[in-house]
Image (cartoon, rainbow, N blue to C red):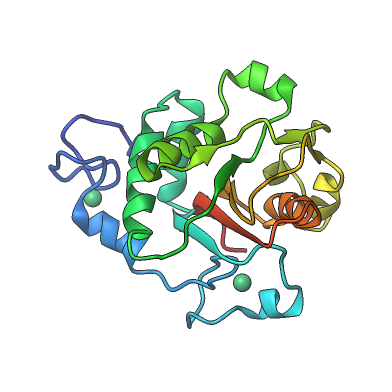
Length: 223
Ligand SMILES: [Zn+2]
Ligand SMILES: [Zn+2]
C-alpha cells in the first residue's frame, strides 16, 4: 500500500484534509460525482448514451452503477477494503451507492453477490462482494441471495490474465442452484474489469427466466 494513503481517523483517505467522513467533499466530487458513464457498462463516456462497445456487443445486463473508477487513487481504497481487512468500508460504499440511486425508480426483487469459489472464500475469510451486497440489502431493504449463484470452477483472478483470455476464463465458471423467482435482479460485484464475469452470470439469469438484470459495483476499470 502506498505510504501516502492511510486510513486515519478524522482525515480524508485521499487528500488527508480534515473531515469526519472517509473522504472529503472535494474528493467525492472528483472521484464519484463528476463522471459521465455509459448507462449499460459504466465505462467513462462523453455522453450518457450507450458506448460503442455496448452497441457492438450488447451485454446481457441492462444497466451498471458504480461509485468510482478503479484507478489511482480509488484503487487504494479498494485494496484497503480487500486486503487490509477493513470490512466496515462496505457500509460506506453502500451508503454512497444508495445515495446515488435515490432518484431511480427501479426496484429489484433480489441482490446476487458475485460468489467466490469455496477454496478462495476459505483462504480470504470473507467475500467482499457479499459484504457490499449485505450492506446494500440492509439499506435498501432488498433480499440478498448468496446461495443462488455458485462458482463451480476456481478461475484465475481476472486481473492476473491478459485481456483476450478473460472472457473464456469465466465461461462455465458459474451455476445457478435453483430457479430464480424474480423478474428483475441485480448482480453485486466489488470491481468490474472487462464485465465478462457479470455478463456470464447475467446470461444464466436471463436463461432462467429473468427479464432484467442490472449490475451494481464499487469500482470499474476503464480499459
Ligand atoms: Zn479529500
Ligand atoms: Zn458501454
